[in-house]
Length: 226
Image 1: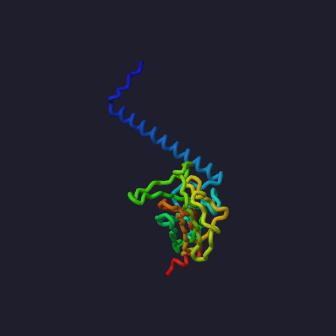
Image 2 (image 1 turned 90 degrees about the horizontal axis):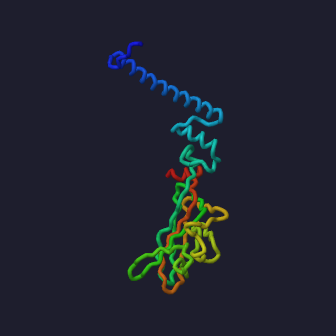
Image 3 (image 1 turned 60 degrees about the horizontal axis):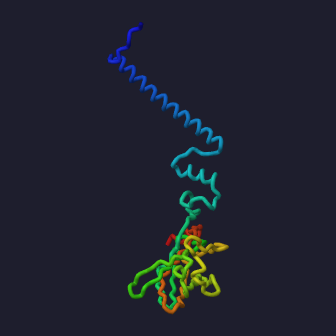
């Protein structure tokens, strides 16, 4: 029978510690080997090494996205193109009234208008309490009788409808009204919306939001330098 090893002996304990340390190093080396192998496979498939640098991000976007879908905040400033929302100021509409509101496209970039959504409230003139009108409600409570609107480009006087449009027909939050062809507004353009309340007693509070993209072109950059 061989002699038993005394685990209490200092040399034995040191040997055990070195064995544990060696096992950890071996596991780390194996992990590094797997990473290098995977990186080589990704390179063969056309992928760049992952990383936080702008250069790596640009290369990844160039390989995976068409130019018009690449994020505009990465790369050349001339290519900046990002989603944007313009909301008209709150408008209070007493019975038998019409009120206009104007928003200005700031000079940093143009605006491509694609969708529009609405949020309409009824207002109690005595308590001033607002009640949201849910357009998904198919009863009378979900309607805005007498409320219409029209939109125009105040700079070019371009109209977007020949007569005011019934508010119940457009811009549901779940189903935004989408243009067949996106509309472009130049930097510094003024967009004017006019609401018409032809109802005899109803008070309304209206919010209208335009959804789209800001696009900065070389001539827009020059306009930023005053």
